[in-house]
Length: 245
Image (cartoon, rainbow, N blue to C red; front, side, top):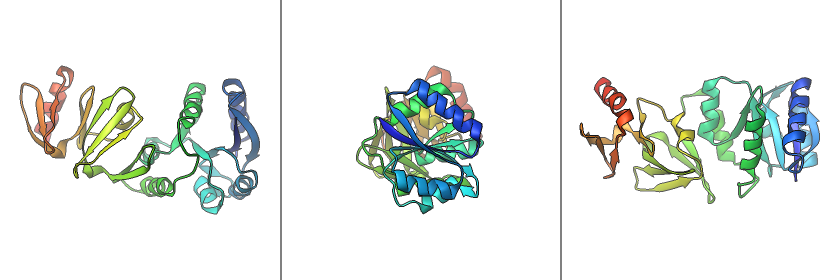
């Protein structure tokens, strides 16, 4: 059972989230406190030491980021709740931090709770928060890839290609390193976008800057020696992209 705190300055949204949690996760989540302001939230987290925190970004007298700078207790899972636009959502994805987009969908809430059960540690990673703060204000240049061993901070231009197998994705980097994460490729297709990246096949997403050659028959040779097929459905779009570049 996760002891949870909800940090949200709008009463009806706090109540809605509480009711959803009681319905979909009565045996997994117990709400032990609420906060409306940044100062109140920081004090509550340090005092109650929760396992799980749902936190809005915009709060009374501050933001969720202000809360994170004030607290000393950090051994909890964090799920941001936000009404931010797509650009900010991409920043969350690059930082590998969990979020729920308002209005919160019950199925997405359930998925988020199920996902934290798979995590080895319940501790905020400073590098994730730093990346999120950085990416909120700039075009993201780095992505965090979470594995059981560590949070890997990878420069976007280091990625040669990605290969998926079921619910796992392997990132192949230009230094020969491979990093496998327990998320499907579709999670990264929405942030590694054309023209720099292109999903050429159900199983492959490539960095177009590392293409050595490609054939009309539908094979791509990458700088690391990988031979990657282009699916029939992607051929026209791929050749058009190469022509435009």
